[in-house]
Length: 377
Ligand code: FE2
Image (tube, rainbow, N blue to C red):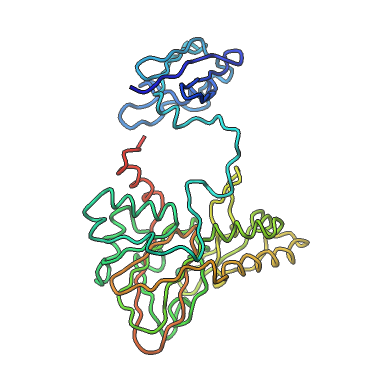
């Protein structure tokens, strides 16, 4: 039996406070409670969707009565409407906080080169047989921004089976799947034997693909190790070393473009460091190969913007921030492309290195975690 809160109407009946037995007090406005009412005239009982618009709400709504019964908060309002809200739901969704959100969402774990990649390495046979094991692997992607999967098989196209475990392929002009191996006249510098600086993919898209999967079909060349860098760690370091540089990359848009295959002309203007209105990091965009002309920065800020951009790029190259691993045939890794940069070391003329790549998106991944864990409301 969960312990129940005491209810007190406050602020001239505009709000109420729930006093929980553990001492926590959460205040809720009447209009917020009305807007989130869970009765069947407020929300469709089958799909949970709201049945009214914010424009229909009474803005000076007062709370006439409020009581706790049947694990619900039951409320009558001054416009003669009534509703109820589940108490546990109210606890999970309270907004009465004094602390400001931190730059980095506290649900995330940021890391540097000390991270042992085995921390985020799962096995295909396990995640295909156990939903909790699948949720654990997906949560590594959500929390660390990347994960590795062993024993997938070296069958071309097998990465689609992995995407099917949590979501949907994002098809692009590169196809549903793209081949990453050296080519004579590559449309993209990724298709050479050269090393690639850590980067995020496709910043010239709007929106960017939020997940990338790279599956190793063959890897017997010398070199070609995979490298990942936590872009949020890099942004945090930039902010500590130069708040002014951080601010420039946050406040102004850079431009990114791609027309390498002759059939596409992709262009997007977005900040290199994207921060929410509440001050929390949302995304980084790091890709010198796709960098376009800077036209959105005021004339007087351009020299300092270059200094800030160069500073951030230098941080992303610091060896102590990079986690390096070598994918064996039949293994894959997946990155949160809004956060974690990926790259590779150069590889030799002899031997072959053949990866297949695909894009997908984080919303389905998060949804799959919630569905497995039963937190779907
Ligand atoms: Fe890439």
